[in-house]
Length: 396
Image: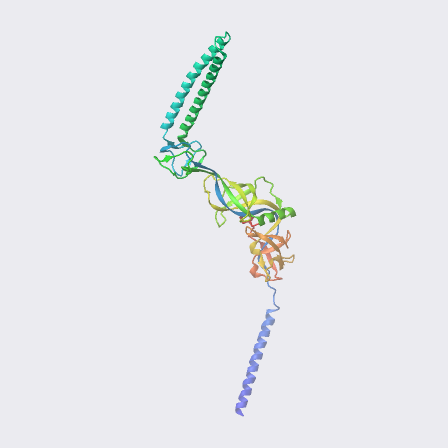
């Protein structure tokens, strides 16, 4: 019986302790008063604006020299001198090689002697024809003799003309013994040295001169990109570029480093490459410091039109729902946020081009997205994130 009493006393004591604790908690809750509302969450917000956005396309391409001159001899002979420094700059008309001129000097002297001989013959035949013309009136010579004298005179004049032509040809060949650069540019390595035998119009070039300023950039655009641009132009979503030669920006590496000199698009080819389904475009870019060399692989951004009233939002403001739909947090008039579906077209710089779901004047959350939920009251401050469209790799 004593054991049963002890159990009862322990149970009563435990109930008293629990009741006291409950009363203490109730008293504390009464002292603290009713639960307070959470303060607004501070977030970075940007206001949607419409802007004029150039429609660009980023295309792969290779550089090629503006002019290329393969230096070949126009006369046969032995190279006596090389007159340039390999890899250096040359000017138009600058001597590059000197071929042994002695055989051509001898031919020129021979041609001049032939001219003197022909001129002497002209003088003799002309005098004879003149005498026969005077004697013919008195029938002192026959008509046949007179005709022969006139023919001999004309033959001598023709021989003199041929001699003068031979002198001109000999002078030309003698001048060709000095091989000059036809263009200004940078010359490469020499394929021949002093003592080498060269022949007129040989297959192997002695050297190559390339003009690098300006320089061409040959680009390839897919038919799908071209078709999309034409559809946008036809639908009025994009206005055509007003310039005759749209501007071109060359990107030097995968990081998108822009070449400082702006180029211009010269033309778009009308023939489709059957193996790649692409159309060739050619741009011309200033290259005063020879930073671009022939054969370099580059990418180029070409402005092909203008989209009026375009809406760009920072990329970090856009998130995806479970079904992959693009959304932003829209700040309402009461400063509460709610997810809002939008339609995006492509990345432009550090932003997205929005084609549906937003209007100018809408406020969207850019910074502090991890702190909000639907219905969260926010304190909106201007976001420091700005959309920079010029850095974009256009992909239309």
